[in-house]
Amino acid sequence: MKTPAEHDTPCLRDEPEQFALFSDCDSAPAVAAGNALPVGRFSNFIVYVDESGDHGMQNVDASYPLFVLAFCVFYKGHYCEKVVPALEKFKFNHFGHDHVVLHEHEIRKETGSFKFQNRQAKNEFLGQLTSIIEVGNFILISSVIDKLRLRGKEEQASNPYHLALGFCLETLFEFLQEKNQDDTLTHVVVECRGPKEDKDLELEFRRICDGANRMGRSLPFEIVFADKKTNSPGLQLADLVARPIGLHVLRPTQSNRAFDVLKKKFFCCGGRGKVGEGFENWGLKIYPAPESERPR
Image 1 (cartoon, one colour):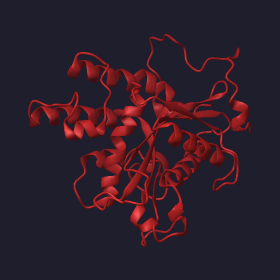
Image 2: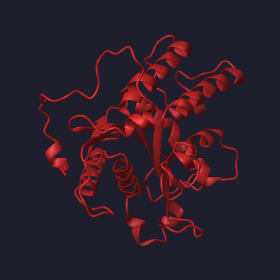
Image 3: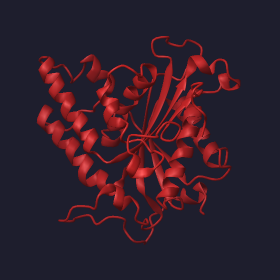
């Protein structure tokens, strides 16, 4: 298998294209197409990442003492032919243009471009956005770090972001193995947070991919940093899913419509026949694990 370093060469190559630029026929269903062997050196999947909560350990917010990292794994064909157009149409319908960047925090607080005329307008907006997430065929991999419980562990000095990143990258590799995509390069897109934070994250990402992981092997992933102002549909959808996951972990008995949709997206034990079940400790990793759960 090629190592990540061997994939870093930026030159363009004369090789088969993954996708035809223009096609009149619909793409195959995402799950089925994702099982097809990749063409060329890139995998059939693209990963978009976002987080909820902060990774600081000194001053933990008792009302939300979590750090949540969410990986949205899209089959590229489905993403560019179905997901992106749906989100573009949604923006044209509501704003008249597509240069609005969707942010969960701004939508929730009704700031910036998201000042709704009334409650009905907000509910309609959220309902349509939820339907895009529901219909959008992607795999969800997430790690939730309970910072209060982490304080009593040996890893208490660790960066919660780095802990969550390791769990998510390991699970991503297992998913790609299942899809026969573990011998080609998969890009992992994250939002820039600041020069120091980005440098630290890239170093940790490369350390994990160089073998500092549960499998003790190199992982064929490459990190891509996107500017905060980048109008990326994938990053915007990832931004929308992270907080509902955290709220479910924090208050599991509370009604959470968004999570009811998301739980069917998690990478789970049993595959398509067990959608919405068996995702704990598979697609959703909580650390430290609750006393009632055994680590996989």
